[in-house]
Length: 347
Image (cartoon, rainbow, N blue to C red; front, side, top):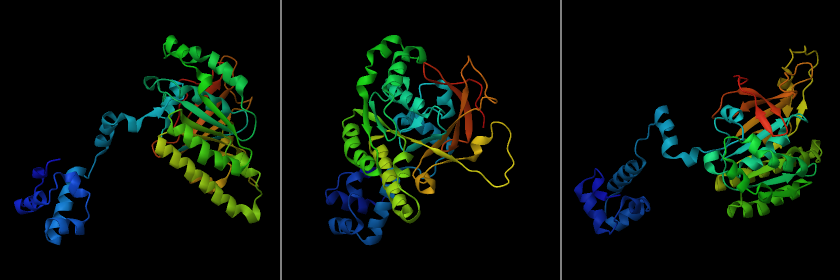
């Protein structure tokens, strides 16, 4: 940027050029005292110089909502999402998972959390124009063995699920070769994996998605009571490490979490379908503070379920996210994968 573009006294411009500073960027590399020594200018002159130079680089300091919306077109990479592989679910999340931050998917057993995580491991491998990141996924198992049989079923059904992608593109991707599996049975192993092994894969571009299934299991092995404070510190350490990885490599982090059901004395049973309001994700506030977005998945009870082609429906709900309102939609888990039901989104 040319120094002559600055609205400054010609005397100050001449002093800057005499000090052999050729651009605004070079000027802003120096502190006020350093500029005084280099240019021989007074302290007020240097303060004016820095203020005007920084304002020129920054541009307008006030942005309207329309300005911010237009930035999405100017800098699309900063607003990219990872598709969930289903247009209905993508609409619920306004494009998919954010690239920066931890997303938690909590819910009861059999709600389809692992199914959605596996689907994301395949979706991340698609080209960017089809909602992927053209890279693999790291899947850390902390409870059960990795569901490799189900993964192979999903791979075989990708052409049926992803009808938006040309068949030759789907057939070209070697899905199974780009999912890196690790098992971590305790907190120490999990922290070591996140701090040592995962960064290697992310830094080389071999993976752009990290899944932990589930984040609660290693910590639930540690008793409560006297050691609850150390457990909270380890939760914070894990959250900090995951957030740093996500921000550094612009890679989504999905943590599957278990839930507990709060039972209140004298509580009056709610209407059918309202039971998810009593569910509380595990690990408490120490973990909740690490999250960017929390999603809750639940399966309808048989007496309340809405059947779709013989498949019981489930509900995916946005609990909190800075860019989304509380909302939900229904979905089913079929042989092809997780599919949202059109027309079921509600705020």
